[in-house]
Every structure is written in C-alpha cells, then in structure tokens.
Length: 73
Image (tube, rainbow, N blue to C red; front, side):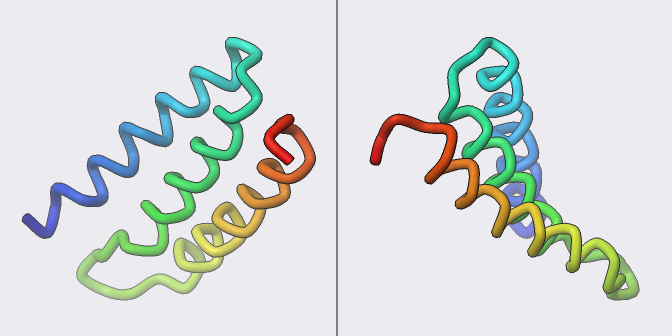
C-alpha cells in the first residue's frame, strides 16, 4: 500500500505532461502537481533534501500553471 500512491502520482503526472504536449493546457497543472506530490511523498532509506525541495517547487509551480495557462479562471 505504501508503494501504490507514489506510483499512481508518477503515472498521473506523466499522463498530465502528455496532455500538455498535446496542447491541452490543464495538463501542465496535472503534470507538475502530481510530480511534485510524487517527490514530496517519495521515501528512500535516507531522506534527501534535494528531492523534497524539487517536490515543493514543482507543487508550487503547478499552481502558477493553473492560474496563468488555463482558461478556468
């Protein structure tokens, strides 16, 4: 159960980036959001600050993509 969530976020993130490359703008949000969550919850034997930092930056950048590149708002 512990390994299912990171794998699901990774797969959904890849699907989001595929949507983004197909010119569907919400794909950037989905891709960066799920990739950020993947790196945040990814647990190795030793905690790595770099992966946590990358996860937080990707997670925050996803909201920038949501508000600037989509026509939702």
